Length: 134
Image 1 (cartoon, rainbow, N blue to C red):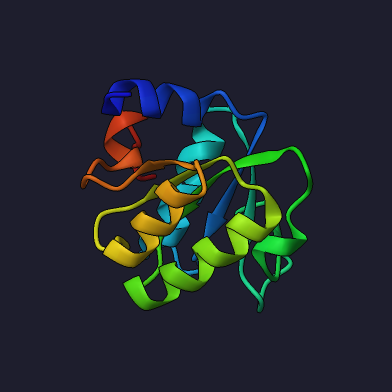
Image 2: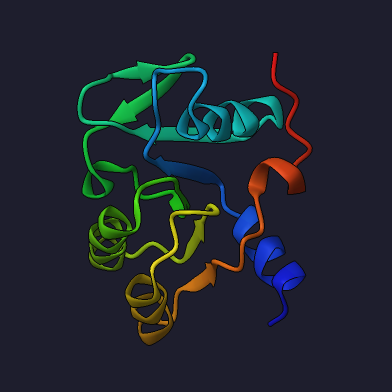
């Protein structure tokens, strides 16, 4: 699959998780969550210290995501991305989009080994979905 096809498959999900969701509106973990909301998508943040961000529900870990979440945006440092991917594999996540800066060769290889549709080429969801900061 090319990147456009991978993105299409990612965006077909009924609901989306955001690993690295942040309550700080300046951080990309907040902007990505708001981007989903702006586009009318169902989104669940992953943040162990918040129950809600920007009106969207939050869970503490990938394992806590509801079953309809099949696509996961990852906005974490590479070492954390590796842990997130391990949790995502265990949870049965089908699509992972590593935002620029979150990529790790080990995490990408783990996705590929487990048949996960992975986007980790520097493509930014904020650009693809046309995010506008308010």
